[in-house]
Image (cartoon, rainbow, N blue to C red; front, side, top):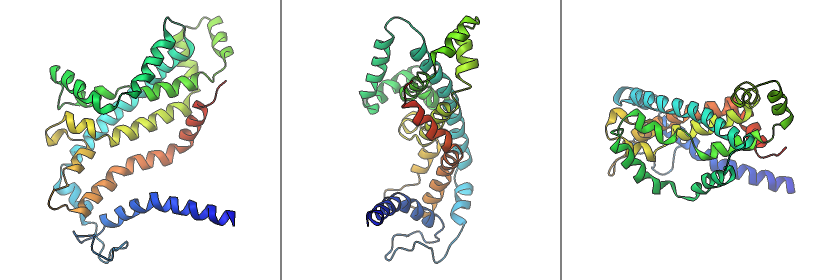
Length: 269
């Protein structure tokens, strides 16, 4: 009986999360523009690929894809490198006020992100970087949660390894680059997946930092398809499904590293 209740709750929770995604896929293949007529058709009576073709043909979708790819790739690579570097420094090096600096970094997470939008915009506007790739990329080159995750992971590595390398004459950067990074694949993969997902789906900052269609990223471009009076839902859902595919594929491919990275970052030596 307990198992039955458990599986019933599990199925209900899965349906709650997967159901809307399946309904979005159904709408994206629907030929009708008004897809919310009752009763709702989960399997369209007239299915079509025209919505997907229209996304590529009638919208600057390829340009939005290119913008998202550039921004996401640079931010992901930068986050992996700088977060690992900072995490190594906080976990393995000794310098004045290390704990105070780290505490200040963590405490900055208490500040709502929306409050920082205006100062960031003013600074980038003064630097003439608004509506440019640099303006989109710079604010998220490194994030504090990723630094925290890497610090926690590096603290699990035995000190004997580091001390042996120091006795052999290695510098700290060489220890970081040639010893710690190669054995940190799970944590690095977790940081890469977190950053890729966040950057690819980021909406708030790109919508503030861009004002021309040719600089929109995919989430901002998709948002322009919503009209106050009439929205082409099949077209919008087709674009949304295409936007979500890369993050879904990356998670499915690297989920083993993702789980290992999260698990190991929460353990201590």
